[in-house]
Length: 141
Image (cartoon, rainbow, N blue to C red; front, side, top):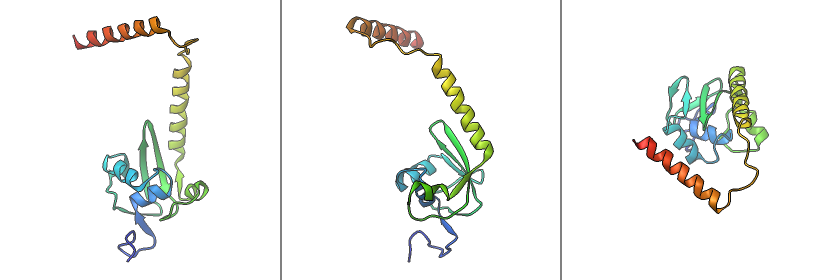
């Protein structure tokens, strides 16, 4: 018996296997860890790695500071090319807009910090260490 289709339903697949096949995570164990850590929600609720998902199911996937809402459009048990993986889901327009907005905000926030013209020398590094240490000591008070 095929372990992934314990219920013998060819229109369903385990959630951890689908996330791996759709290239959201590099390994099934990474997908399983993310699901168990509450980073993947299925239908608005936390899911288990063994949850059977099919076409039309909505998933909310959090990876780092990026959160994607996708709808499953295909079932994949095997990991294929990136083009094949892209056919397995469709990201919602709201999710795309929110992701692009967050990316623009990060870009604007990063532009306000100018990179130093050169790396600090020994004296500069020591001054930075003293400054950081004094900030830590102030926080502890």
